[in-house]
Amino acid sequence: MSSAAAPGSAGPTRTQRALFQPIGDEGRATLVERRIAEAILGGVLRAGDRLPSELELGRTLGVAPVTVREALQSLRSRGLVVTRRGRGGGSFVAATADPIRYAERALAATSRLALRDMLVHYGTVTAGCIRLAAERADPREARQLAIRLKRADAADLAGWRHLFDDLQIELAALSQSARLTREQIRLQLELSPYLALLDTDPEWRSTSYQLMSALIETIADDRPADAPEAFERMLDATAQVLIERQSVLSRSARRAVEPAAGSSDVSSSPEEER
Image 1 (cartoon, rainbow, N blue to C red):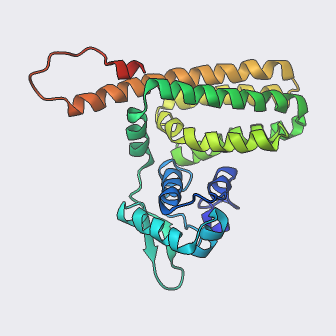
Image 2 (cartoon, rainbow, N blue to C red):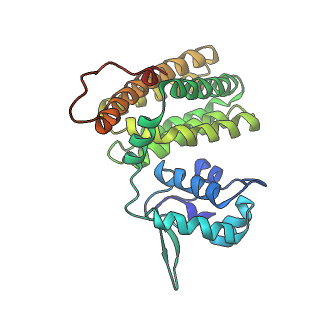
Image 3 (cartoon, helix red, strand yellow):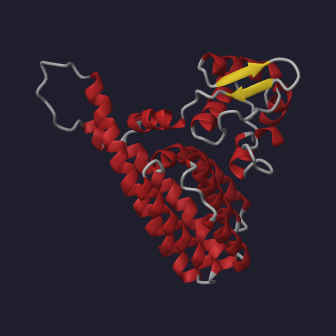
């Protein structure tokens, strides 16, 4: 699986490994395509990253190689994947794949109700992970996470999002609950594209850095009673900014499809509130 590692890294991250978990009996080309597309446009796989071979993808995803081949063909037609022949060839993430544009379209198409529901689910699972991590983790493990956080490069947006996703998953792993950690990985993959969109704001990057640092410190300093509150502050801040961004993008998307004239109704639609 080293072929899926981000450039310059020692190996695949937890989020990248989660991408290639088996799909199951209902695995079809569309499901394979969707999983890989979400990983590319969500920033889990970067431009230039090499995908595993068709045989390896088929084996790890639990589908036939012909299914993988069909999915890759669709991804190529969408401009997300390029295939090179010969020595050193294979399928690679296309340089034209744009995670930010994908996140803007996806967030604009998401209702406020669905977004809030996603955040509630994410918050419930993550809060459980944090509570257990604060009780069970060795503070030395959390200190290693704090060291990694201090190395964050705010100028590298893709690297920034990879680091923060990994830190959140590592915190979940400190809970010593395999079930919760697996669910955290799944939810992190789902939410990551939207968080990457927020990362484009320098002020938000500074705020999220401080909030993550405060959360990790509660575990590193062996203050388990303070960890849940630190996470709640981080979740509340994230939810507020994300919902505000969704509202702006949703209004812009509606204006783009409204007739240029003949409509004076500018009130919010019921769908925006839902």
